[in-house]
Image 1 (cartoon, rainbow, N blue to C red):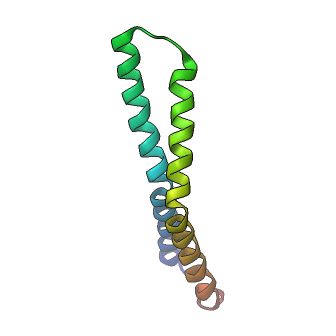
Image 2: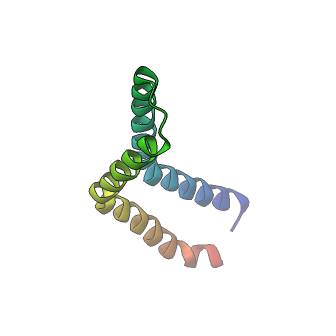
Length: 89
């Protein structure tokens, strides 16, 4: 096992983590911006108005994307488990 393999595995893990987190984070970002624009336009300054919709929408996105997320994580784990014999040498 050399440094290049370790870097490759680390890069794959970080890429997978970013891909799994992106749909939820981007949805929260878009909802937050839309609600902030609405709050600025109507001069409403309620903290729960920004928090509650982001939690609900993030939960919905998580439920919709869960099969894809599980598939990505399982794929990474299968790859890593299959790679163990090569890494031990």
